[in-house]
Image 1 (cartoon, helix red, strand yellow):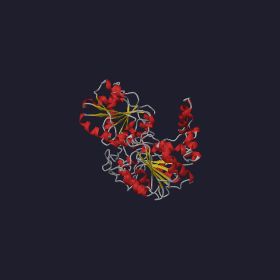
Image 2: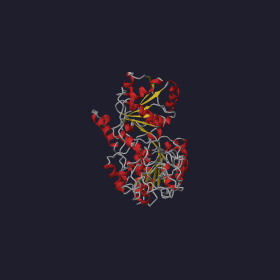
Image 3: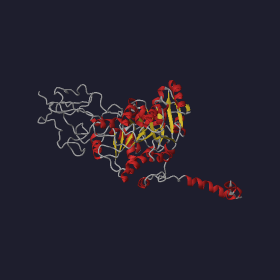
Image 4: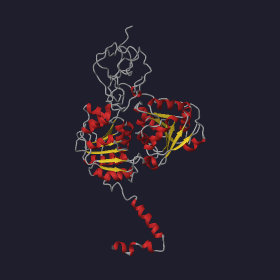
Length: 548
């Protein structure tokens, strides 16, 4: 009781001057904001210093909530909006735990971070590597689209943390070069997306290979039925931290439903794409993405295409150009874009309205990140209006509806649209390849690590491989396992391609190399299919010498 009657506790109420109380309130608030530091969360001092060197001094809300429980060894279930700092929320506890136990044994990583896409894996690794280096923690990605050899070599030397997509990790395990029986902590990032992409069986199998008493952290934008099945099976008494409801991601954005006639769809799209500022455009299919990029280039708008059918090399180059501002427009599918973490995206445009409210939330989450403002616009044809409104209602969005046509001033006012230049974009030439032929690198040349000392880049007679043994190509390899089921018959491949290889087994004709695409240019994706091409996986080898 004395606490409440002591006059010393009420000076500002009885003082005639209001200034002291006005100053005292902000002072308390100012002290409470930086009160929680990374050191207060229980992180090792070396890790705190590494964060400071990267300019990271104050934890985000999701980090402050989850890190202490994760450091205490609890299983953690986290939900936070895109751009809320989830990567460090799980990455910091993983680094802290792994650093305590010394180096990993060969082929036995100590921590596993599972992600749905290649891009997300690389971005997670890029965020953690500068922090792991001072701790002596080695981090490696295991994703499709890149050669196996470097991943296998890293596992052979010992990797503390492996950041992987389910398909490639499962293949490395099947090859006997990776084992999860020594994993101490496992992270599932974007768990709902992995479920949506059909990775749930692969994820379940991989988790079952980790020790049952190991720690598990699961982070997801939404916690629906599929994710809940993983929680019930693999997590023990998890503590749940949710920094925002599922619709909070879009509450800080401006949402526009642009009602357009069918014939105006592309002109409206082109004028919006020509706006100033960084823009992501979503299309439903890979073919739709490629077609739209070509159409935009024809009217003077340079855009990059991103989808699962692109090679890793092409996807990396496209993302780099977008991040560096060389391209202001990125046209993408849902699957590819969920791994994008790029600041400064001011507009998300749906040329094809999503059917699922979760897809809308994921798409919209590319803008208005970390407190920034942004806008989301959806092009809606008359026949799509009712279904789109129903989807938006489920997503918790009440958009402003505007009827527009190409050239309307309202487009400029709402989303900054402007007329494209009309001058076709001249595509920059591809970077020169290391080999003069269609392969990605010279056979037996420097670099690559796994290639032999000899070169085989001549079609002359003395060196022929007529089926005596499988031909070994030592250039860059596909992200799919190869089968070596024995030599092929010399009679195969007399044309441009042999049958039964899915169109990917091209042959030389005479002494001239055809204008073929290299392995690095062939499409592949991250779907959970054992990472093998549908028609087999043998490597092409040189056709027999002509006898006429």
